[in-house]
Length: 264
Image (cartoon, rainbow, N blue to C red; front, side, top):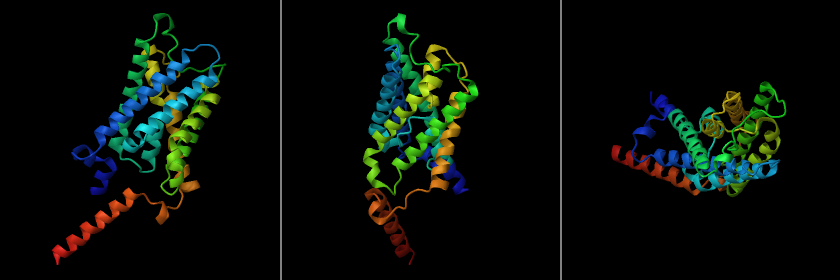
């Protein structure tokens, strides 16, 4: 029963010391800024694939930098579902993350529309299939982009590779940029269901919207499982363990020692 409650994450909802509320706010703000700055670059018009790609990549890097220590810096339901699949976060937290991310993306696109001239409000970044791309082709593209993203997220944040942690926001942001370069001509690059939803709600464009959810989520889950069970995470050595991990373990050992003394 205790294991089931832990898997669901019920204790996080009832524990007043939980950081769940702060984490949800962080995810909300992260996707808000992502849609505001990323979709805002779409308004430049013309063939601006590189500009849009860099804008989304930098927005993700900035979000991960300011919020990673609070929520893990998911900013994407595909990443959240991947972390859920390998047991990194409990079920309730994952569901609430997706809700917060979706709400943040909608808010970001709404703010972007509010500060945009009425004549250009049709260029707010709604995703759609381009260049005669078929829905199945778009689905595969979205799946592969999310898969590589989550593989990189797992690798950049692997506890056994502390040297990559300071560079994690940049590495993840560059991966997002790379995916946009290949994805924009085909699917407008969703690779993030919340980002796709935010623009779709504000513009009222939901063409083939299913593939912008199913593709990235399946890709994210696959990426997390591949990294964990096929590639294998780096071995966490004594020198690579964080001070926080060591402090937590020492505190738990001290508690158990005191409990044993009191029992005696």
